[in-house]
Image (cartoon, rainbow, N blue to C red; front, side, top):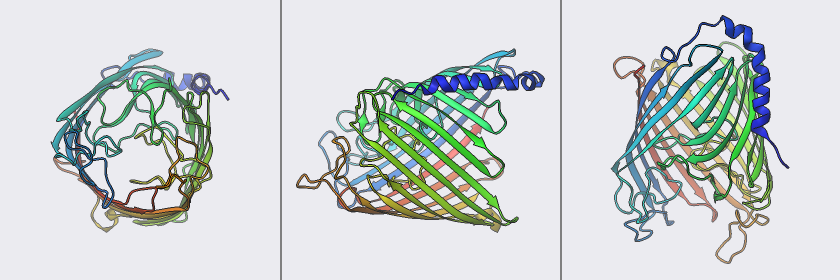
Length: 447
């Protein structure tokens, strides 16, 4: 199957733009300087992960695994400039960023090595670097309601989404297009040939997936849209192609249905289909995974129940350290996306503004998964026991707790403090671990 997602979306976007000509003609010109913004985000990030009795990928000057404990404390400064567009029918502009990550503490044997811990880059001897930087940018062009960007970009879709769960954000390099001509409809597409993961200074790294690792793929293309049917319901449809690896298709919906001023029903459905493509760099597979959520919001309280199933024979994979997995039970550590795995989640959120503490929120959730079975997994995703036999009937659970406070006024306005704790226990296919993340962010608007 050969899908040309970016081209088709670009054509749709260009045609749709025609509907907005008259509306745009009446809008005042923005201007390159007048529409510019310059922001600086200070992010202080502490992360520890205790693998308990199991070995963890922690290193000490190239001497190999030393313990099951990973710990890092670092500070990131993320400076972002976004220009407006020059006046006229066709406007041009530029986006640019400069980021630096600074090591504050991570001693020998605690830096996490080269693993999903990914707080600081680690050299060939297993030592964390003292600092690293990211510098990049993109040129952009606007025609009516269509914006095209070329360069270093941060897409946000269910099939390709730049991750931002570590010290510095992930980025991609390529071309993206976005159109908003039709009220309530946002169309997006792109073709990307490189990525920069959170611990990499190189903005031109090869593409990699979370479970399959680096893949010899020249590009990933994507396209689709989100449509707000009304104030309460949003529908999304997307497709992507990781060349010579997979075709992915996504459909989802989210709704909020108010019953009165205090009470509302919430819910949603997410569905992915993934099939091998081209040279099949990660083997043959035909997977589908879905999740469904239903809940109730009453004043400051929200309670939701979700169910998730992977019906395929392999792990449902996605781009490494990205946020490209919009299923409900993909949470702080586990994705609950192993072959044949079924999982249930109960989640509770509390907004303390209703109790006189605006800016303070609390969340906790518990997920239990069962039935993971690798009997029919391909060689790239196979997991086996000590005898070399495929693992089956695997189980796990995870509990997360999060508290966040955002300063509402004064000199420290918008300063946020967040504590995230996770505990997970599993049978042979995954480690038992406890982890804590402390994140302090202080955004400053310069322009």
